[in-house]
Amino acid sequence: MNAVNRPLFSPQLGRLSVHVVLLVYTALALFPIALILINSVKSRAAIFDDPLALPTVESFSMVGFEKVLSATHFMQFFANSLVVTLGSLLLIILFGAMAAWALAEYQYKGLRWLALFMAIGIMIPIRLGTVSILELVVKLDLINTLTALILVYTAQGLPLAIMILSEFIRQVPSELKDAARCDGVGEFKIFFQVILPLIRPAIATVAVFTMIPAWNDLWFPLILAPSDDTKTVTLGVQQFIGQYVTDWNSVLAALSLAVVPMLVLYAIFSRQLIRGLTSGAVK
Image 1 (cartoon, helix red, strand yellow):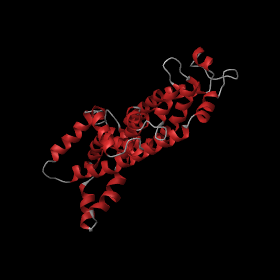
Image 2: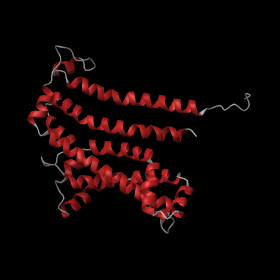
Image 3: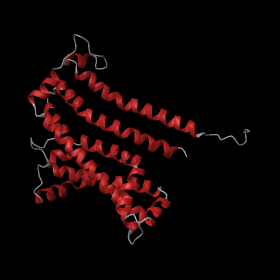
Image 4: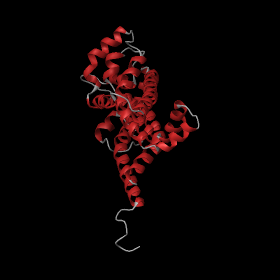
């Protein structure tokens, strides 16, 4: 191959560049988490003396974990957050994929207006409707329930999920769907057995972008479910933060325990997420 026909940008180099960027970004994102983990096993004096130093024999202390696990209902808070996050994530993926399939596959009146409505849902924060949401939750007798949080986070994540999944569904070759229809396969089977397996990178992307806001949110748990039986991890940590005194050992210990599920879920979805990013970056 001569110099004229030689491509200036090879796919292998492009994929390598994407992987390098992702590794650098991951390292930067994990640095605060590592800092929290390091300081969670240090004494209060060692935290303030040198927060970047590793724990030593003199500075090592598990008092924060002991207080969190013995003096609070942290495991219940942990379970509440897990139920809310996984429940909303399941509903977002299921209903988001169905709505995306309807937007991408079928033509009908009002399609553009419906897509515009979904786009507006991304631009307008759901917190602007907090008062109306609270009134609706009270009328439905869902106050201080995990169901209220699951429904709110589902509504919050659906617009973005629909927009992402619909773009991936449009890239699925129409020949696959037409061949299945010619064989007498119904629309439900085409959706669940053909479309969903092909858009797994998109589903992983939606999962990553929706699970973290639901897990870390403080606003709606404080307003809709502030009771001791329905507190989430983020809300439960606030009891260690006072106006004048903050128990930093307990705060860092609670945050260290709270970050574990997100790391596990991110590790599960990261492979599909990176696959989707690299396949879309280089053709």
